Length: 178
Image (cartoon, rainbow, N blue to C red; front, side, top):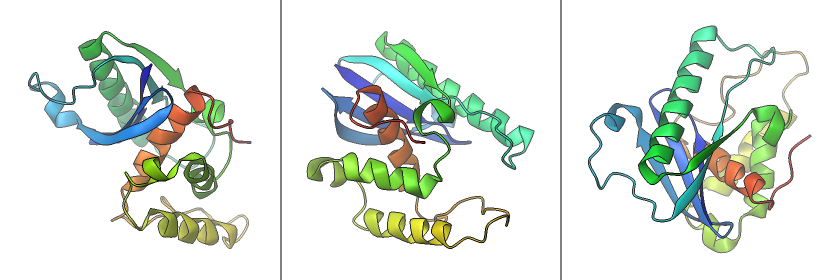
């Protein structure tokens, strides 16, 4: 069974595609391209399920506009991809698939669950970026406002790690975070 995970963003959504539970493709859906997408834009033969993160408000400091933008992007990408392939959409709130874990901690668990072939889809510095972010999170002073991202702006693969995490949780290769 082919499953795609969608981690929504403001302008583009990260996509991870798996066949029989193994991630074999990472891609992007650029929201500006959806309306005019041609017949060859992001074809995923045999796609049956699209698993998308549905952003939630859980008290963390995120503006209403940010949540609207992320929700809109995630939904647009997920339902466009599903309609294109006659697949169904499963929506998961973060608390349903990654719990309250800080993003770097969750990414460490995703990385550990990926096999070497799946890891090769990511940039060579991915593990180092995850470890640096996890170290930063571990040393962050309790009570101090958390940064908007634990990663440098140039490191976009954190979105693909979340998309892959959605796939791994949906196929049972990764347990929900705490």
